[in-house]
Image 1 (tube, rainbow, N blue to C red):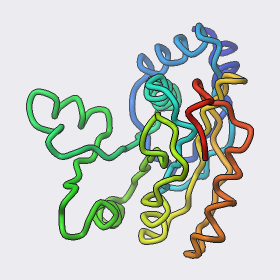
Image 2 (cartoon, helix red, strand yellow):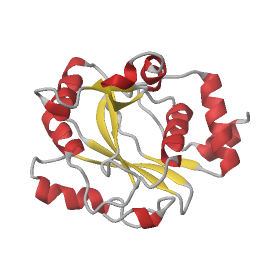
Image 3 (cartoon, rainbow, N blue to C red):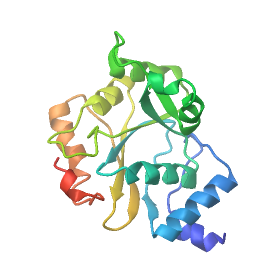
Image 4 (tube, one colour):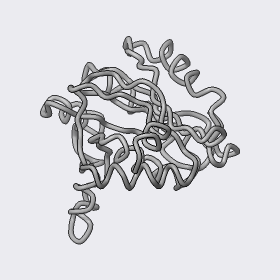
Length: 204
């Protein structure tokens, strides 16, 4: 694969603090698939080792496919939450390899507490969260991502799935203040005008 193709698809620089994964083969395969589908990766990724990524709009199962392609094209070590039972055989190995983090929904500290503890226990942790929680239309976001970021003392980074322009775009980075009523409209405004694959399913 020529550098011109890679440069056309990927225009995001990662600093040395950002958790990495993958190899040249996984990078090349992901870039080729994105190129064939006409997609590009753009934006700014902060040189930070710990971030909560807010991924939206989520209107289709294809979002997960493009999320994985983005992860391997950039060589990012992304993590996501999954019900702990999914990490048993025969799927446990795959879930761990993909970056899944097992959570127990009814644990005393709750999902938020488990993820705050996860940030404290790790030197590097990029946690991707779909605030809509489903690809179906919802009237409001779930606020777990916000409370995790505040509790862990880490910023929020937007990742926009723009099917209108076929661009997967990072940024901007938002530093939550703890005042969710003031911060949430500003975070959601970042996604204004972004077209999901099934825009009728995005009602926030």
